[in-house]
Length: 380
Image: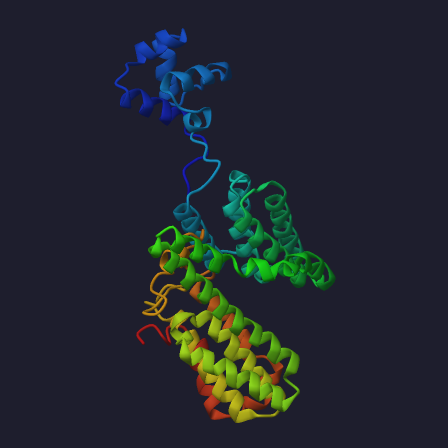
């Protein structure tokens, strides 16, 4: 997946050749023999640690660069690591995948964007662990990584992400009071935080940077849109037993989804809304409506399961400038989970007890087969 953390031998040879320096010239500068330099480059011996500052100075690089140590990864490297690890969790035993993940965490323990994405990785895959004790251990490790980020990172955006991740991890551990304690202080400032994009867009306009203003204005509206539908999911869970309120929430949410074509714009997000709506209808005994929402859920999920799906996060003809914002994320537009893992989660979702009365319906059975059988959407 990655080169060895230390490439001292290869780097000495590479740097020497790039600068057109002979082994003898390097040996003379360091006060060692030519044979010693030859042995370093052939991995037979390692330079004395006291020589490393001289070597770095000679080649005009840092000691970290000389040794091939990368304290931080680029966004592209983080995406590649995350994708590789998702593949590992899909095909390897859980313990082996975790071993590889932990090794990378130790290697890049000061790369805070990477650590936050590893928290996301653990949160998305911990349920694959064989027993409850291991699940708790993985969630605890992820929470520890969040703490490290919050204690040491100075990037406000990364820290904000770590706060939310830590609260989600607390919920998964059954620690709802802790999640409240983590998030309540941030929520008090939301009336200010929510205006950042608007204020920034206004500032760019005033400085004549219309292009940047468009990016941030679109980004703010996109985020507000996700917030509207995300909060509708919670409102359905809270008011599902109240028919009039339930219908009003769904009517307004559906209008937003249709107006902004959210099924294609953010299928993974819209699928979550449709699933909650299906559960709400099923719990109220509205079987046909529940099945209708499940068909919408299938429509969105098929975009995630097909072989050549669009990126998980993207713009469209209306949100045509948010691509620059998306690419700033460590994971960019890629999915946080492997397709096989998404299919596995779908199967568990359709087996929810609230759908028990639907299992005798032929329409539900056909939908279940389409969504759980491998390759069902590969060519659609």
